Image (cartoon, rainbow, N blue to C red; front, side):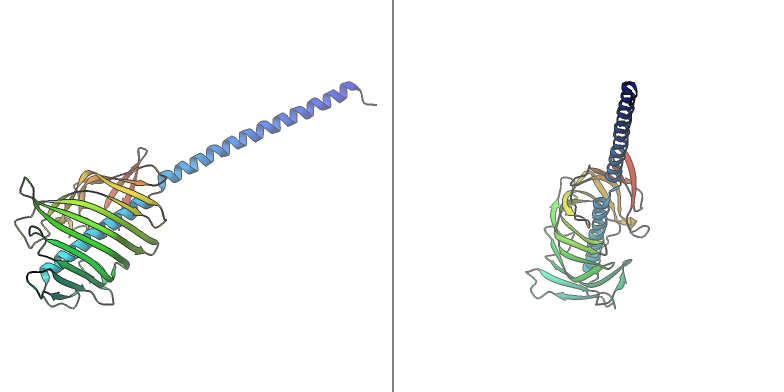
Length: 286
């Protein structure tokens, strides 16, 4: 017969074991909970997809506008790639310029292009009241399919006698190897230097403000707002290919904290810093 003392001791031992086991489970749960929080926070910090996608589209937009301006200047010249077709039947109406890169990639202004850019314009970009509407016909830029429209309107001069432009980006889509980037945007551009050399664009310098809404290749929606006017310096074309050298924007992806983009201190490079919760990450535009 087991004594009451031994029986009580056995029950106490069992109770202590259960208590230890419960405490151990709570500790492990707490550790993994913290670990999960750290993982989520780390993902929050590192997810720069929307920022990278927006910066890619931003650069493509700038490069396409450069192609169009070059095309308007070069109309009538004979080249293997691209070829230009002008349809100027009515001098009192808008004209059409087709920049045709052909069906096979050709290198033009440092980028691979194929397909057509169709430009309907009332007059040259630096003419007051000019409207330039660009659409695309199976057009690929660096093997990315471009669709949508880009409309630039010269609004005349401001109080400083500098040309002011409205730039609308309508239903733009960029199909990359990783997925599709969508963007609708409106920008204001002020030409602060280069106005005297009408048909030269490499000395043009603009201040740009604006906002955009978009969707990244991962399906995440985002908003963009220029918070400190961007400085676009076309003289950087030859040295780096990236022409925005200064200014700040904020990318606000749905479900994530804001990403504050800083384009640098007026240096011709493709490096953008993205600040998230006081941590800075480098984005290099390809």
